[in-house]
Image 1 (cartoon, one colour):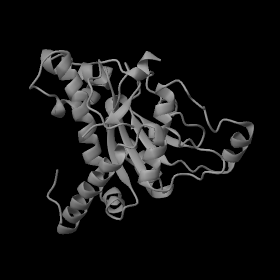
Image 2: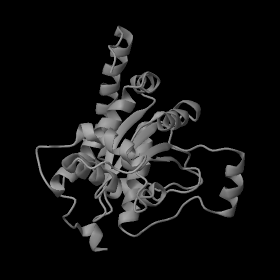
Image 3: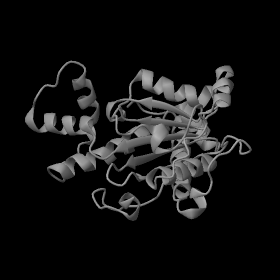
Image 4: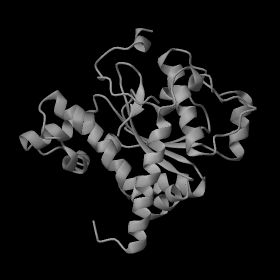
Length: 255
């Protein structure tokens, strides 16, 4: 995953091919912010060195936030340059994963059919734990799913992955502008996105800015969860925000 601020609409060389907190909780929150800042520095591991780091049977599961980021960077580089390896899909691997799983990253992404994490990061069976919800919206089941990956499976990295042209965000922005009531449970999704709608810009720019704002908000909320914050403070976990650009297939950091 590259650290870049290029316009999502600009083609690249690659696509040519609540309540008051206790003192202890505040301490953990400060540590979480520090941990996230460290992870941000690690994020810019792209280019030839990272791209060469594909996993093989003799390379163990990434065990640190930094190693996990390098693996995702390398996979996205392969994906967007049409050098996918589709790793860990063999008959042997399919038998091995029956007895257990050891994913190295949790990807909290959108339900959009154009952004399947295993393809975007060129990973295979047992590599990623994916949690998908429209607009990366959080509820108790999503929080529990992320926490399960981190606390029970000892996963060192959580990536909140938004994406260009997110329909859930677009619907929330339109409903906010028009006062329209959305059908059934879709309104819940819009209500969760509403607080971060960027009113400093208009039209498509408002939707695009809100996509990134939603990633930041979800990342911050996860980092504020006490059990996750404690892991960040100890260096065992990083929670980072990212976007996938449909036009270039690039995953890049959201700061």
